[in-house]
Image (tube, rainbow, N blue to C red; front, top):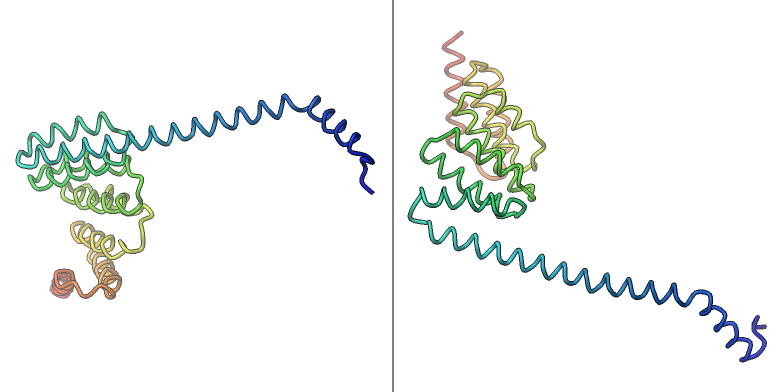
Amino acid sequence: MDIHQTEEQQVEAIKSFWSANGNAIIAGLAIGFAGFIGLNYYNDHKLQQELNTSEAYQTMVESTSEDSEAFEAAGKAFIAENSDSSYAMLTAIALAKAAAEKQDWVQAETYLTTAIEKSVDEGIKAIASVRLARVQLQLEKYDQALTTLAAKLPASFDASVEEIKGDIYFKQGKNELARNAYQAAIDGATEGGANPALQMKLDDLAQAINLSK
């Protein structure tokens, strides 16, 4: 049997419930609706910001594509103005590439460090880390390069990491460690096909080890 015997009793129960709780329910609905409107506004605003940043990035790249000095100046300004955007990371990597082409290793190191700090994508972060280690190798910062490579990177970068380790150990005169690293790089790159340059490094190293005996 229903706890409310008559329709009149049901109506009175509903009235009593709304009398006690109606204001709280209405307030909750109002807050929820306002939150929904606010969330949509926030999402729309965020999307518009990303679109504006994307357009600014494209404009910067296109307008300075023929002038490396202009690109560097514009790139620095872009990073400063859009430090929280993923495009800051892409700009830093592009600036690092331009600096490396001029063999300005110190500047390339700075830009790649910035790219890693700004990164929101593990793949891009790994690319920047591997490039940073190569730059640190050029600067003879061997221990720092090894520290850079010690970061957890996606498995697809294992071969590149081992090859750079081999280059570092070779520069340090640690031939056995270099040989092990090169071999690990070759083993790790088997699925993607043999790397003749890497095999040549290993062969040259083996010959150097034999001659030193």
